Image (tube, rainbow, N blue to C red; front, side, top):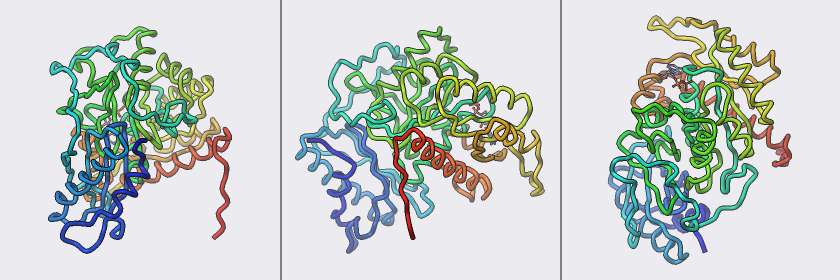
Length: 402
Ligand code: ADP
């Protein structure tokens, strides 16, 4: 027997909210369940400050008992309480009775990735194989760019967080093994990589499961990989992470064309790739090369995002610094969908440096335009993924008459 997201939902539904008359099902508190092997994460609408920790303890007790009854190992539970805007206002880490002690990475944080060994122990639960080629993972989306510095990692992170905010189970993999930026962008600095039974446990941050080579090697040293090493490192990161069940896995690729993209195409079946570009002519030329590369590798290009499209000054005026619309024209020229434009926003830059991507969806912090642009981009990506999977025949169209 094993735990599933559905079994967790049904067992937690009747739990009474301490100090209140309703159960969590009646009050519709449970928004999201993520299960990653022995880790579970819940997102709940806020029941009010006094009820948070007692409710977290009650959920942990019920879930712990359910896991034991199913003969499943559950070692860690993280509960995020969110407000009406979906913003996390409190995180609880209630103790799970009977949970075995955690295995942790060595204190020096310097673990050769080759030390991972998938064959060391069988996984506690083996999710179903899926169209993506990664067990348990529904859709894999690669995010690429022709050149560095155009905001590829920024778009990857915000796309992942936005999908999670819509209720999807999402993972993000820092495939930019030459210059990993996820530790900064997702605020992983103080966290320690956990390796259990030879597999990497992703970090559960901002509602997303994240993994990066930046937490396995010395961040200060340059990462110089030869082709086969890059291939091996990327493959291990992808395949030896306990992703659990995911609706979407976002892969932030290194800029340009190269080894990692080739490995990706050889080992996984992608839903498609998103190409990030700034409006200037030089950036477009590189983005065209990136799009062509994906197509040559047999990867669908879901579309083009124009980042740093325009800037809104303190005077409220819009400035088209790099020539807004350039990437849109390029997308049209290549016959690719245009997924949306994201403005230059100083708060986004600051939130990225601080590892607080959820703030990019808080209109009080970033203003209305950025948050809405990111959400619109995410909706377009979801649509293009659905279209791409229908094209490949992995999803049948449904007709809804209302
Ligand atoms: P890449 O992954 O393409 O190398 P990054 O995502 O690391 O690029 O972004 C490069 C820099 O630009 C970072 O400092 C990031 O915070 C900033 N940045 C990216 N997009 C925007 C934007 N729309 N507004 C403001 N700053 C941005």
